[in-house]
Every structure is written in C-alpha cells, then in structure tokens.
Image 1 (tube, chains in turn cyan, yellow):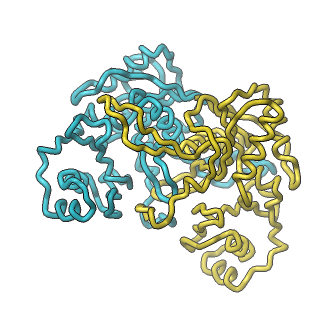
Image 2 (cartoon, rainbow over the protein chains, first blue to last red):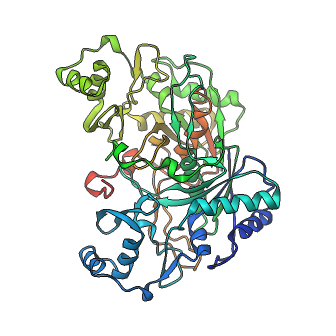
Image 3 (tube, rainbow over the protein chains, first blue to last red):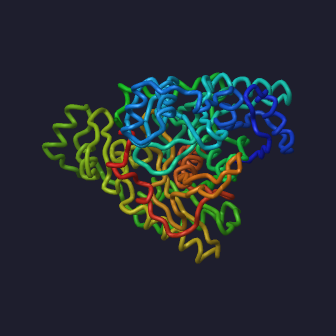
Length: 246
Length: 246
C-alpha cells in the first residue's frame, strides 16, 4: 500500500469548485490515477470550499454560551458556535467534547481556529459524504478512474494521547469491512471480524498530511484493502446504547 | 509512505527466538531495510513467542469469574483469564471491556481465541516495549539498519464501529510527535499539535495485515513521519483524570 502526498499551494476560498481543484492538483502532481485508488481530502479544504468559516466578530453569544465560556475560560463567541454545531455536550472543560449533528464525538464539535483566516474559525462540512461523492464523480468524469474518496479530520480520542486521523465522509467505499471467511493460521475460517478501513486509511493519510503544515490536503492511497460500493459515514458510527466503552 | 507486507508461513511456538524469526522473514522477503524504516509486528506472534497461551482446561475459575460468566454468557474459564489480565473492569457485557495491567482499555483485556491453538486463548505480551526493543536491536545487529519497531494490536474503540490497529509497544521511536513550528496556510506557526504516529502507523499496518488472515504478521513502513528516540508506550496512555471523553 502506498500513501502519496499531493501538494497544493492554492488557498481554497468559499465557493471555489473543490472537485475541480482536487482534479487539477492530482493532475499537477503527475500521479496517474488507477481504479481502486483512495483519495483522502482534508476536512479543512472541504469546509472552506463550502464556506463553513465564521467571523468571530459576527457572533452574538447566548447566555448559555457566556456562562460556559466563563466557566472554562474560552471565547464566548467560540462557545456559541460550538453549541450551534452540537447535538449534545459530552463534557465541558477547556476543550468542549461534543457530539456534532452528524454524530461525531470530538473536541469543540470540530470548530477549529488553526488554518482558519485570522479572526475566524472553521466548522466541519455540513455533509461530508456529499462532498466525497461530488469529488469521486468529478474524478471519474475527468480521469476515468473509479476511485473511493475519504474526507479526513484529525481528532483527539479517549484513552490515548495525541490526535489521529478519522474519516468523516466517504464515497465509493464501505467504511467497514468483514474479514469473515479468511482463514486463520490454523486453517479455521475467521468468524465475523469487522474492521474499519475508512478510519485506518484516514489515520495513515492524516499522518502524512500533517508533515506539510496543511500544504498537503490531498493524499492518494494505492493498493488499499477496502470494499467498494456505496457507503455512508453513519455506518461506522456506533449507537450510544451499543457502546460498551462508555 | 509505503506499507509493505511481509509474509510468514512459519507458525510461532512458545520459546521461539522471535527477533531472529523476524529478521529471517525480512530477509526472505527480499526487502533491503533502510534507516528510518518502521517494522510493525503483530501482537499474536509476540504473544506466542512469549508463551502467552493458556489452555482453557487448565484454568480453575474463581467464584467471581463464574458469577460474571453466568451473567454475560461466557466461558467461566475465559472470564477467569480476563480477570487475571485486568487492572480494572470498565464494563461487563458480552465483551468485557477492561483496562489491562499495561494500561490499555480494550475488549476482553486482550484475551483472544482467534488464531490461538484449539482449546486455547492468547494473552497480550507481558511487556510489548521490551519485545519491540529486542526486535529493534536484533535488526540493527544483523542488518545494520536503524529502524523503529511497533507491536500492533487490533482493537474496538468507543464511538465507532469496526476494529482498527493500535500500538501496544514501541522501540526506536517516540509514540507521540509535536507538529509545533510547522507553518499553517496563513504562515502562522502551528501551536502545539500533538499527533500519534505510533497509532496511525499501527492502523495502516494492521489494515494490510488483516488481508492475510494472519499470514502477514510483519509490515515494513517506509517514509513514515515520526520522531526517532527512545520511547515507551505509556507516553501515549492518557491518564484517566485527563480524559475528557469519558
């Protein structure tokens, strides 16, 4: 499996045609895409193309936001934006752990100051699967390659220090895969063993993106094991009542 | 970055010289190691070499194990082994979520029936860092290459379905890395951004291992971004009181 970085110096602005920008960046990189390649695209560029950028000075914090902001020492306008992005708050501390309206549990509901224009924050894309599909379609139309697309984000996680890449949107692939039927060392068929290629590929992609200080928002992954098909990110979200870790 | 599978048909038995087996498998693969390569080794072969295999018929379950086994419908002998491996139980259900004595929070405290000989279970290695270091040393002695080694495991996780690879032991690398100092798109230096190359590399490695039905217990990762040095896996374990996700 190869993880190939694609540099992009162009700054994405709201309303930019992201699918065509991605195709151009891939072309400029000289990589000839093949069927089965997975294209990872960083959340930050997707959010910017969608215009998911908020100027803090335009935000009027609610009473609740002010109260939380005071308690945890954050900017009340930023707390207001986090609350708007959240379906529920998991924990209120210097980082607000929240479940976003998409269902992701992450720090500050994905509201991010880094790589945002000065005085602004970026929000997660409103529908990352939709963006993944738009990029997948455009790549197929313009290059003929039948690829999968993963929109990636970098997130903290329970139990372990350090952020790691996660998938927040997919197209052209199932986010999960069952290894059932493969034989183990003793020749017995593996019982149902569900793995998550979408997250594993996102982890590898984001590690390589990170080296570029956000100048590598696109990664081509070649030779990845995954199941093609129409997949949705919600397939990998664990229903809370089935989450034994909590 | 390249993720290169190394096939190994030899079954590892207790007492086998694992470091030399790994070096031989690498040699047979024809891969010429380079300084900076990361060698991922699956927990299952490490556990077997250490003799961390328990015959269920040799186990006498305690009263507590019997009580839990009855409640959740598991084999009381398996529950007994899980309890012995655990520092604390997080959740008692059809999978026992437990924190192992190493500090990992995982299903069944890492006690595993798959890929174990019939009637047996495997336990996690007692000191995965030690094994990583032994393998690292042997590779350097026999090939001259200064590599890092990651012992990997496949684990379920909170919030998301599907197992993903995690690091449970490291040598020759820091499990965490700070991207501080890299510049963002606006030319500002990134504030402290701690990422976890050990887990990201384990995720990629285990995805590729999984395709082999455990016949690919070794992966060579070339071109990975990580920080060399003496690292310990405990550096990436988040102290419970600092875990905002729980």
